[in-house]
Length: 292
Length: 159
Image (cartoon, rainbow over all chains, first blue to last red; front, side, top):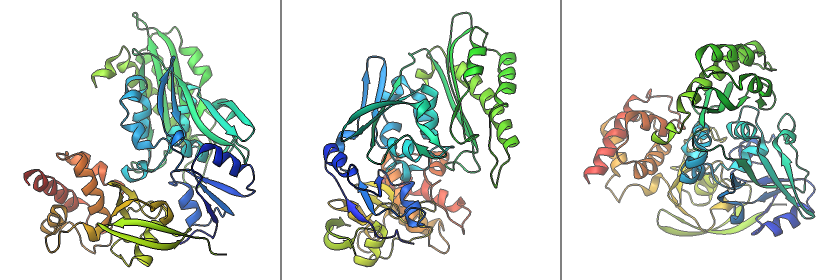
């Protein structure tokens, strides 16, 4: 099993890369290669040109700035998992990432690669939706910001023109007292989730929910932020009755059927996982995650 | 038209130069160009873990990395684990614990565990199972592989 022949390019800088993507007609960008290389090995993807961006170190960074966490597109998943900086502000990213593949794939796999591959069940796009991330995109003529809401155009199609490069993403930080949980259901650990749920929550001193974000991945063709449910939960006490109501709401998600799992099964998983994630996130609210 | 590049890489302590087709995986380059056939290819799409090698100390799937991307890197393959006739402690533990049957997946398990035990010298059984979750074995049922990994960890700690 070999990729079909291609012309290999390995630009050394972002400006060189943007010059290349502006001219190449049928190119694929090679980031960590953990999704693209299998597709090329199986010849599902046969680009004329392959642009390897692994030498562009300026896209590999983790920065905290003014209430935001900014991560470069070429930051490896293993570096995100082991980042103290990320653990201190957004530990849910690491909890989600430990479900992504295995040690060997996280050593190569990147944040940007996953966000551009955009598998509907993938964890990192789910996290980007959960936080309402801003995607930073550049091409030869300039840069633009794309809201995560406008990122997914269709099944596995990100909002990128052939000349565009995703350079980094930014997420707002929730503060030390937030609770979080990312859980998923898969046939085997490390496989793509049949369904996954992420929850961020803030609770006041009287146990009332003051802020909450809920995202389900794997159900529909892209991760779904449950905005209506979030609105309903605000002001309610974070308790079992409320979680059971949330479970019923989360079952109403739009879901797809495929050769293996029906939409009805995915809807049911969505309800169960959202309920469980709300429970865990609530138990961690108030800064207790810092103690493990 | 065949797209090739000249690359230089260090494999198991030996410097090599090779002219490689850019579409060849690192596994292909190791096997075809350097005749190091100990690295096995199972699925060739990143699922089975048989082709795991160490690149600059990190366990990676050599079927998902291009050979041309290994230019300037230090690679360790299964052939580089033993010190002459003296088995690496992880190899010795696999032998003593009967951690292999057909042996096809074994190079991937060994390289994976060498990297993992360097990072985590005293792992729990659960951590070992997590570490090898990206390697598939169809013979052993994993029980003796986990036993071997625990034994290897102890051997390395006692060294």
